[in-house]
Image 1 (cartoon, helix red, strand yellow):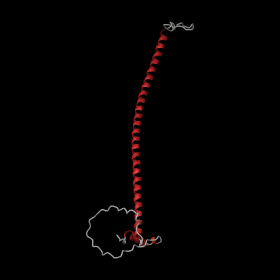
Image 2 (tube, helix red, strand yellow):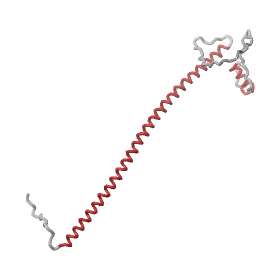
Image 3 (cartoon, rainbow, N blue to C red):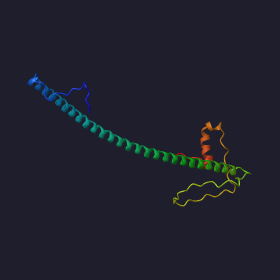
Amino acid sequence: MTASPSYREPPLSPPPEHGRAALSAREADVAAREAAITEREEALERRERELDRLTVAVEAQRDRLVAVRAEYEQRRDALVQRAQDVERERGELLAAQSRLVEARAALENAREPGEAAPASAPPPAVPEVVQVEAAPVQQAPVASQPVPAPAPVQAAEATSPDAYRDWWTVQLGSTPEAA
């Protein structure tokens, strides 16, 4: 390799005019630089420890977030399942209610003289009855003719106090008794 003509080799030793003062100044400069480097290394180590603590905290927070998200998903799935169950039960109740209304209408039609319940109508659903043993009851003599059902209560009559009693009579077949 050839050196360029403007390149000069540095001197191997400090020039003699600088002497001991220049050497001590250079040593002081090197010591200051080393102290600054040491200080920066300590600051970097502190910052690294701080970042490690923050990383651990963020990872713990991420783990908690994952756990909360999983719990949320589980609760949401349970709520969706419960909503479906409630909707199914509601549908069953509405169907039972409509069957009850149809059965009631069929019974009303069957009670009217000269008309019978339609042959295509399914038999009314009978709810389960809990059997309770009771003391023997004396049977009243059975009338030879069926007792006619009272006339339905009209809307105008519904405001009278007897309308309430008549409604119960229609529903239960007898007058309500005071408690």
